[in-house]
Image (cartoon, rainbow, N blue to C red; front, side, top):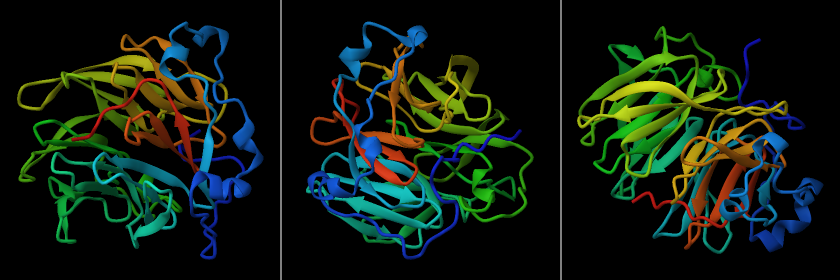
Length: 337
């Protein structure tokens, strides 16, 4: 059976143009949050238990910040402007949450945008499902198209994205944006689902790997000598060496996200100690730098992505199906620039 990484229990799969978005601070909207927000934050099975888990995640509870969306993805925190931008794929909108907790419409249409990140100049870089593009927002408000085709054929649907210190952009290109609800139904032109690099100046697109079933989340190691890429349908995380010219080598399986609950590898980040967070069955799986599982952060809804934010980078902003959540953790994340 073909796995749908975006399937989420209890949420409608039809669009509602009158859907209400709750705005305001966590305190102001707490009245609207569903009962799931009081569930335990962490669910750690015997096989996953590790003495280091509490030192990394802690024991805080998850806050519901806003709800009523279609399906959330791509949260990114700006460390200097103090805002969080995130995507609502089926509604083709992007939102921005201020440091004060106010949420406003940021971009519409977003072309069913999915993953977002910031380049080394603080410019927003976005993966668009509906157009099969990677774009960059410029300071003057214009949008620069960075990638659309590989060898004359349209990309599948760029999904998740990271930027190296030198400015090169790496992104995954599965086929999920060519189906109803999460994209625009249309035949796939490329015979594979790959991972690409865009040179820092945007002049060249290079295919780096094409042996995935559905590549998805990706993140660098602390020293950027390795690139971790997960495969949603295979349920595992692979690790590649990064060569001096930006090409990849290797690709061995580094870790597997196991569990019987809904969920699969999707969004992925590392913290400032090199611990790797990856969505998976039941929530967000946390691995240490060696690939050993520390535990699972249980999320109230199926989680697609997350990012570290706030001044200390110790708030984990979680995009989980129809809602935006926040969890305070003990080990901070990394600034994007």
